[in-house]
Amino acid sequence: KRLLWWCRLQKKQYKAWKEQDDDSLTGMNEAREAKLNEIGFCWDAHQASWLARYEELKAYHAHHGDCLVPKDYPTNPPLSKWVSDQRNNMARSRD
View 1 (cartoon, one colour):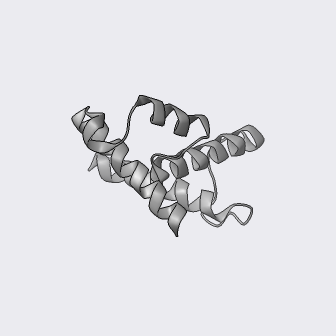
View 2 (tube, helix red, strand yellow):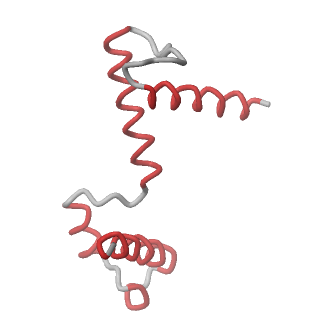
View 3 (cartoon, one colour):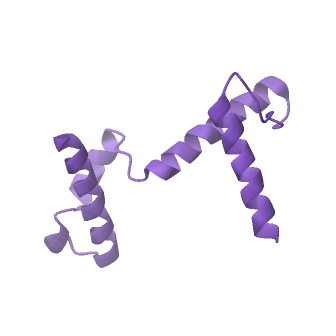
């Protein structure tokens, strides 16, 4: 629980720092940002998840030659749902 709280605090301080560009108010600064980046700190879990699925889709494409992931893809159900979500998002944006 303490690590989770600390990670949330780092993200909150980072966001405030980027918005205000004043490390004296947030506790975040370039040195801290660099140290967290060095260890692969995840600033945006949604983006990290999206990128992970994108990499899985690239692997699927390399193996199958297309991006037509079946809706019921037993090898990787999360990829199947993600591709379906991407298609639905694209269709909604066209409306």
